[in-house]
Length: 87
Image (cartoon, rainbow, N blue to C red; front, side):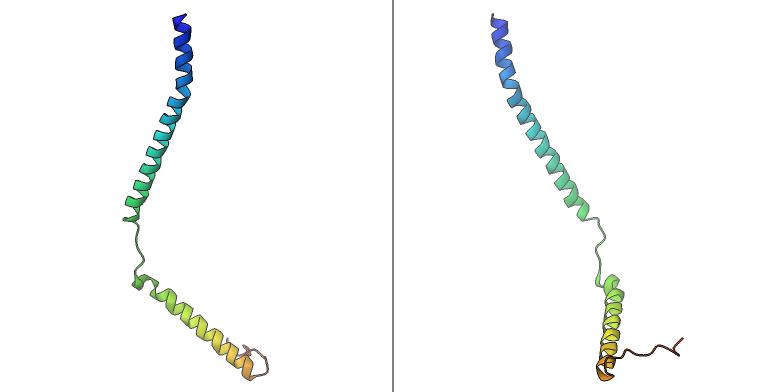
């Protein structure tokens, strides 16, 4: 009789113990992932202003070309510049 009572008592305690174990391991895994991401962020190459200078220069040049074409079309009745002869 005592064995059946012990088994029933242990059965009611197992799910709670498994839940605690699962939560603890989940939190531990999340903490390790956060720590690895934090450490890994120090080893990623950071972009210096020297690396992004050509991209900024190209964007500026394209903006100026666009403004020049817009000025030309405004001055010439909405016509775009003729490209014939500029090969």
